Image 1: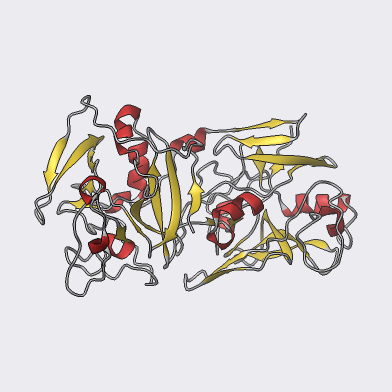
Image 2: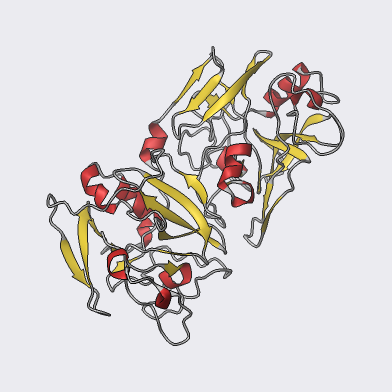
Amino acid sequence: MLAVLSSSSSANSSSSVAQSSSDAYKYDYIEDSRDGKKYKVLKFGKRRWMVENLAFDYQYPGVETRNAKEPDSVEFYGRTYLWSEAMDSSAIFSTTGKNCGYGKPKCRPCGARGICPSGWHVPSLAEWFELLENDDEDKLNLFAVYRNSYRYFWVTNEFSSDESYLIAPKGGQKYELIYNRKSISTYVRCVEDDAAGNDAMCKIDWPKDDVNKGSTYDDETGILTDERDGNKYRVTEIGDQVWMAQNLRYAYLQPTYQLDSSSFCHGHVESNCKSYGRYYLWSAAMDSAGIFSKDGEGCGYKWKNCSPKQYTRGVCPEGWHIPSAEEWNTLIEFVGGSLFGGRDLKSKGGWSGKRSSTDKYGFSALPVRDYKTDPEGRSASFAYYGYQANFVSSTVHEDKSYSYGMTMFYTDDVVEVDRMLNSNAISVRCLKNPD
């Protein structure tokens, strides 16, 4: 199942943009010495990119491949490759992607030559982001995908041992970023090697337009618009506090030491993000990478230097923040206290058991518990839907593996602040900054 992670720069259109053959740009050509095929290339900044899909026939003894089953249109569309083929997991041409494949331990092949011609490599996400920041949108249109059924390119950044990221340029600076199983087959575009080495482009740099976008809140309609991605949220006033009434959905994709993302859709299914919001590791919720502010910089699993500000923005829209444990307790006290307050904060539907809930204040807490990740990167699992709701706070715990959060269960009406493992990804509700 394809899962959209971020389309913050993409338009809401299902149509594909035709590949351009404009004479306004002078192409260079490179020849793949392995089969003699020539490819058009264009230079963007300091890098040259192929503007045609790779068509090399990766068939060697002992290498499982589906390329022999490709249609006659290979000459125009290029070939599709499994991720293991794209990375050259059999090390036919280099060892940089050796043993990278579906179900294999994460091999972190960023900068790998993979199946590309000599002197070229499979791009990283950072290189794609660098490309798509180019101001010449007409020139970028030459990268737009032109076939609806196969519109994604492999990148070298892994999501998990079974999944990797793919990107679809959609014309100009528009793109769609997803992750999918490494066992699917899709296209490859190559970028020229950097004389200084390819490793410098392995760190995912955040698209700059996201960083500078704010938010708008209409207090008459009670709608908050996050201008980073266009998502809209219902808002509710409870006492003197103004809360998001839906779980945050912003795709925070900064990697951790063991994981190549730090926010997730339930079951890795994009439609679940729309329904339930995303799960965020504490490091993602706090924006430990300091992308949007320095308020929670350095805050993560077993942090070494973490001093959250009073109103820590974290991953929230501009003008909103991650609630502290004290602010969660203020909410709990206003709705009737810890023993019975959960009944009025829970959504009316979705909870298991026979207990009723009123959603009296429009907070609509959904029973989406967490995504348990292993700090050592060995395993991860989603909790069943219907039994518990957990929400992030910005308050640190004396045990650095934990932080505080707000929780409620299906078995009773209790709502309380308790410790949460920082390595488990949970829901985020943002609180409006004081005027």
